[in-house]
Image 1 (cartoon, rainbow, N blue to C red):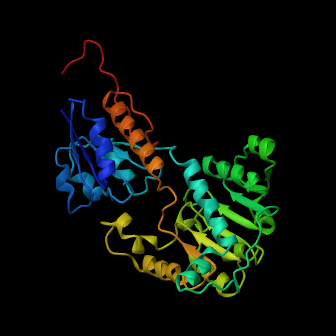
Image 2 (image 1 turned 90 degrees about the vertical axis):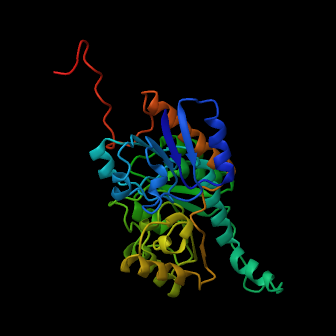
Image 3 (image 1 turned 180 degrees about the vertical axis):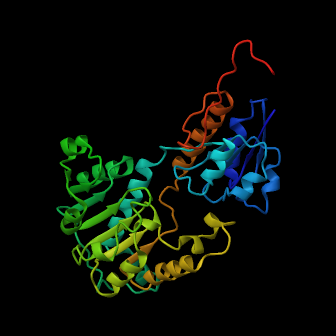
Length: 352
């Protein structure tokens, strides 16, 4: 019987997985609310497969404590919480969920744009105090404004459709332009610096890599309009938080809304439990991000763009399918570089 252990599940998520495996007699399934850490890795003793959200930290030390582990179901698109080198050395497959929330994240990003454009944060804070004055709350129309998309993959493409429906002009930067967006929604592709100069709103939708580290830095922030709205729902390291804080203090940005930001691992305890002590750089970044909250032109949210019931259910369904496929001998959604499919045994083979 194949032992599976899942971590970081709330009651609804446990019910979904419990029902999915109820008729599967070949699996012994254990479900846990807490994320996987080195302190509780013994809960996965004997596991051949584990299912983890990004809150769990699957380090080399954790992997070394699980000698029977064959596959990890990353219940997310991102997988930087898993030690790839250790998985490759052990030939442990890591399967992720490539597609589950394109519309979910795009809708959230557009919500952040609206929140900045119509000054939701100061309006809510003011009325919460019983002050219903409209002084200083005048916003801007989005119709007729130019949205600059940095990245037009599935999320960026969906946001292009939403913005087009709202009457915005859409420009984009992507190493691989999507001709369908140009044909259907009039999206104009251009180089990044040109986009930064022209856009009224900039929304980031790129993965975090060495090439995109601080893609938006102090130098590029000098290119933008001083009324621009900057949105980040991708990864925190894409934006130099310190440079953004400086630009806000100097009045060179109209507003910023970040669902993910440098230093978030210090603040978002539920997501980064077990990550260990924060480094000096992480603490500095956390202070910079916290400092943004002193501006009524800034909105920070706790990496929540993905978090709808529908999206989480799609993540669970896809993760369960990944597990079934792997243990049936047909791995799917395996992240490149983590797993080599074992060669089929030779006919007539045996020990020599």
